[in-house]
Every structure is written in structure tokens, then in C-alpha cells.
Image (tube, rainbow, N blue to C red):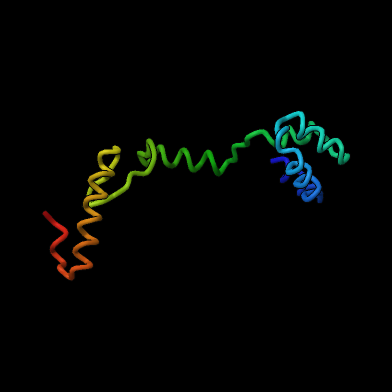
Length: 112
């Protein structure tokens, strides 16, 4: 974020180089020292670093809730959603059979 802040003030490379040269000291005090050393405003950096929620973010979230979205997207395979880690093991076996069938030229060989 500090480098992006520098870029917004046409000072990207100076901030980038200072961050690179002081990697062992990364953290708030260093970021403040870099921006103030370049004549930029540390409180402005703090404000720019705060997470911001936009109207689009809220609309997307609310639309998902109305549509019944309540978590991460599942992985789909064999006509069903795989939501648990064990489901991914099943998916791995299914994919391995499908790949084997494709290599052997036996289109129906992927089912057991």
C-alpha cells in the first residue's frame, strides 16, 4: 500500500527503493518515515490504507445473499458439488479415471 500511495504522488520508485533497502524494518514506523522523508503526509497514507467498502461491494454482497450464496464456491464434478476435503479426493479419482480413459481411447472407461 505504501508503494501505491507513493505512485499516487508520482514517487513510486523512491518509495519502492526505500522499502527494498529496509526490508528488515518493514512496518508502520518505516512507512511513515519513508513518506514523510519524501515530503508526503503520513496521516494521508493512513487514510489511504484503511479498507473501503464501495456501493458496488455492498450491492454484490446483498445480491449474493438474496441468491442464496452463503460461502465459497464449490468445485463441481460428476454432476454434484464437492464441498468437503473428502469430496476433492473423489474428484481426484474421477479425474484420474477420465484422463486414463481419454489416453486409452475408451470413452466409457471413466465410469465404475
